[in-house]
Length: 130
Image 1: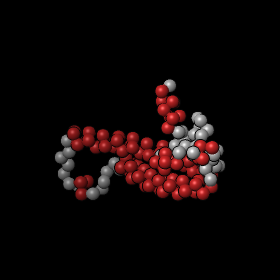
Image 2 (image 1 turned 90 degrees about the horizontal axis):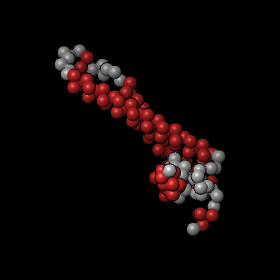
Image 3 (image 1 turned 30 degrees about the vertical axis):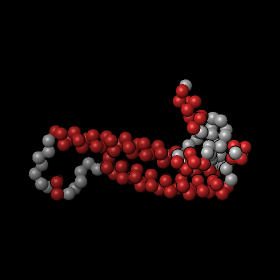
Image 4 (image 1 turned 135 degrees about the vertical axis):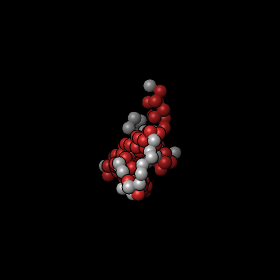
């Protein structure tokens, strides 16, 4: 396979990955903002605020759990955004798609699915066995 002998992706290929990453980044930021909004919202300021409250302890517990879940999801989403932004930086310095362990090109199929990948599947499996 000719791809295995190359040391980096061409500028055209990098441009293709950049489009994919920017699209994912925009969606990820929108989802992050939604999750952050759910975590930050302490009261909805709707009719519930003025109507008599018959909330139970279970309701409060469910609300708290939902906020905790949203907070965890927001943290994961933030890390994903950071990883995508780092991938864009690697595109700019033309090191994108190069495995940080083996130095080989990460297959395009993997990068299309996981555009922030920094390891080939083989390198990832080796690292996880340690």
